[in-house]
Image (cartoon, rainbow, N blue to C red; front, side, top):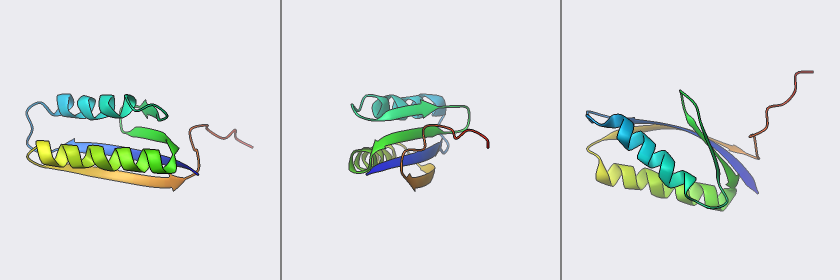
Length: 88
């Protein structure tokens, strides 16, 4: 089964917040089998359900254990939503 995950990371009170966000994204991009797309508002992760969920949750835990505080806003949608549907 495939999954699509949309994430936004907000490190709180971090002077180097952009560094934390990009490190998070780069770690996810390093996982073979995941497609990771970023834009100015969020990061989308597409791939096998177990692979994607396990790695995203591990990275969320990593951020929570290495930063003072961080907020994640997440959406989990079953299926591969990486392709935009054509307007009908």
